[in-house]
Image 1 (cartoon, rainbow, N blue to C red):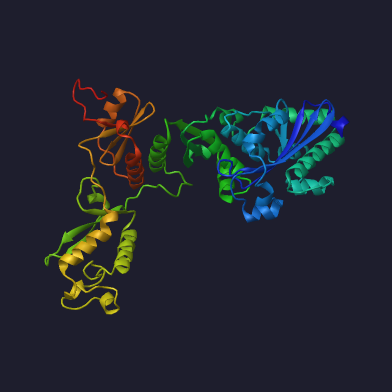
Image 2 (cartoon, helix red, strand yellow):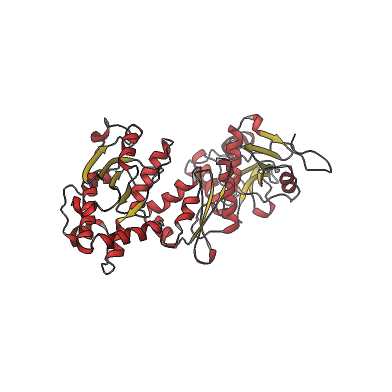
Length: 474
């Protein structure tokens, strides 16, 4: 074997086992590396404590149990040793974007920007054996009669990759394999229709990314505190997650917009999804059926919930709004659930016909305290109703005018729970403040409310609608 691979630059045949398919969320449990140095083949294999549970299906597949890794070193303890194994070598793996993506992400968490030339043996197999219908590792084992020592263990699978490499050289000769390697290294794209340099240019910074399908049709919009890792995560997960595979197969181009931090990324993601309507974003879509309950006294002085629909809804301004809800159906279901749980009268709530002097149906089955027939005083009933709805109360805008929420060098402009945009200087602030009130959006409302509650006072800047020669930033 040695004589068959000494004509190549230093090589590292690599395989990993993990807790799952997502390089940001999951962790490595085992790494196996075969390296070729000065004509000699060396093996390096380590179990790693992932510091998280190993799903049962993964345990069954790999045989790696929590008991096996609990006393093993963490990745950051083994990182320097692994780096010595991989440094200045061509990184060779089967479905390389998975293994390389996980290892790169793990080094990134250590503050190390690991980079290497990468060869994927799936792509190598496709290039050298174009008539072969499948190129997964089990197929390659069967077709090339590889010797299996420990399938689905890192070192065992790394040895299989090295054996396949040997078979290729034995069949095609060193020169042809070298040519194939050169071709793959010149075009190391994660996907055949995505330029590798485009992926390389994506920064490890907060922001929003946009995947486009054919004809620049928006396909998916997402956000991350680390753009490149998140985008790479989509493609590595495509190996094991059906939804991600469907997405990856359609991506033809990628754009991204950097933000100063998490708040900017969340706000921009929500805004762009509403504007561009990407086909694979199910959540965060614009709702034209937004509504809320408002308590209005009827002719008998009973406070009755009235549904305020989208066109008449002014959250942050209107008093006594309770909700908010994406649809009338959601609003009714919530009210019915609250009535049953808290023994509120469904007749007085308008959920069933109210017959004067007659008990509601719920009273007859002991699910109403009798406000409909005077068994409970109206004052007591109103108090209970307000108490039940209190956690759904829509907050009135707590500022006298628009504000700016400072994040890094960016100022996120907000007025009456609406996101106006983000500015980097006074001119941009003035432009946003004079462009008119933005439409209320429930998803953005939730983001703003959450972050205002935990933002330090000094990060919140009071603003005024601009007048001639008036300073906006103090």
